[in-house]
Structure formats: C-alpha cells, structure tokens
Length: 364
Image (cartoon, rainbow, N blue to C red; front, side):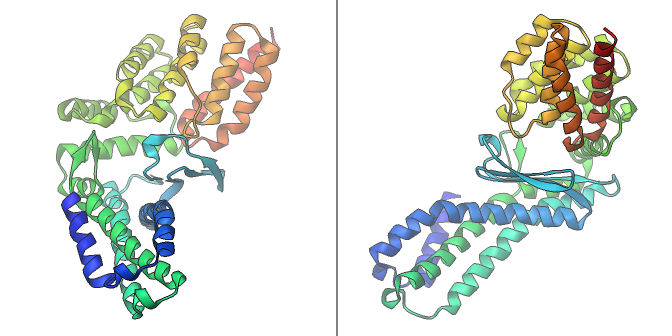
C-alpha cells in the first residue's frame, strides 16, 4: 500500500497539481488543517456506501460510526453519541437483515457497497478537479484550496477503495473484497458466516433465545472450530442465553465460562458485554453476589452496550443485596430502555426476568 500510495501521489503531482510549487503557504497550511476532516469525509462516504447497499437489499440500518461520531437508531429515530471505542473509530455501519432469504447474495452486495462508493467518489473528485483549468499558482487561496482538496479527496478515496476491495485477512478480520468473494464462492467459511448471520438476524427480529435453531447453532460451532473462525467466540453468548432461557442453568454457566475464557479475542469496547452478561447471570441465576460483583467491577459502560442491560444488571445487584428501594428505579429504567435494544430476542427474555424481580419485591 505504501508503493500504491507513492504511485498515486506521483500521478496527482504530475497530472493534477502541475503548478504545485506555486501554491501559497496559506493554502498549504489550510490543506494540513483539512487533512483529518478530509479523511473522515472519505471514511464517512465509504461507510455510507455500505449503508445504502444494505437498505437496497432490505437490511435495517441501525448504526453509523465515523471516527469520534456515532449515530444509533432507537425506536425509529436517530440519536447521536460520542464514540469512545477506538476499535471502531475507523468507521462502522451496522445493518441487520430483516429476513434470512438469499443472505449470501445480499451480504455480498452489502460488502461491496463501501468500495464502490469510494471508487465513485475518487472518480468524481478527480473529474471535477480537472474541470478547473486555471493554474494553481495564479489562483486565489480559496480556489487553490478547492482544487487541491478535490485531488486529495480523490487520492484518499482511491486508496481506501484498493485497501478494502483487495481480498485479504488481518488480525482476524476480512476486507470487504474478501467477504464478498467468500460469499460468492460458498464452502465452509461462507456457510459458517451465513449461519452466524441467520442467528443474529433471528434474535434481532425477536426470536427468544430458547427458540433459536439449536441444530444450526451446533453446526456453526463445528464449523467455527474447524475454521478457527474468530467470530466463533460470539456463539458462546447465544448458547449461554439459549440454555438459560430453557432453564438449564448449569449448562448456561458452562457456555458463559467458555465465553469468558475467549473474551480476549473480542475487541476491548465490545468485551464489556461479556462482563455485563456474567454479572447479571451470577446475580439472577446463581444468586452469587461475590461473582456478580467481581464481573461488575470489570465492566465499563460504552455507547455500544444497551442501556437496558446496564440498568438491569444494576437492579439485579441491588436486588440480591436486598436494597429494594435502589433496585426499583433501575428496573423501571431498564424496562423503558428495552425497546431500544437491537437484539429483540434477548430483550424478551430480559423483560421477563425484570418483571419477575419486580413482582418479587412487591410481595416481599
């Protein structure tokens, strides 16, 4: 990529900014100041390409992250939050399928939406810059900045196109091109990803954990072990929730412990969900306040963690300590936040546990 970047830089200097030595110091200073905003704009449009592609294949657009900016859709309305999670600061779009039909083709289109948007932006900015026929050295500072910025936008966007379209894998993650190619080729890797996506889709659509397809979950686990798939760690969460929802507490605990053991494979910002799940489980299912407090002490709230689960865990901790007056408002807050949870299936199980806790306090 360093070689590609150098080559692109040469082409821009040779064919675009032919009078670069004539750029004023003021223009250069402004371009330096615009470097980060321009880069964020390029990332924003790349991610927007994913979002548009997702909407076109009937995905539900849920989250949009660019650098320090984050927007979440809650009950049909978009809400802004500051993103404090460096793991997703490079840009993220979350779109959830509303059905499980043709997931291979639909996710292939979703994956390619970002690179296509970057390529179109690169071409558009370069062509518009070419329309300005004035010599930069003789132009005013605003015109110098405008033309130069268009070239910089074009270069950045084309680099992001190349980086994301080339099929490659690094740090357990795949580029957009690699994911699209995997979906098109089929095989075990594609089958595992489709099974995981079906699981996420069904749970997000409101299927309770105990009603999830256990055979497909087991098949996904076998494939995850066979492929050493990094996303296989998330299956433990679904197995844990499904067993708990069926009333199989010991089995649920074992899956939870497997989830905890593999937590170091999960990005730090999302890893907090593991500690939250563990704290809530040990408080509610095992009545073990020491274990619940241990995991709660490791938890740190982030914008990625549903508020309903945070309030519910706080309520459970107060409840087990018989601090009912502290627990009651936390239960009310958790219940009010349930509609904002992306995972509607988990929300149903959580609602039931909160209502039981609430009823128990009223009769105590």
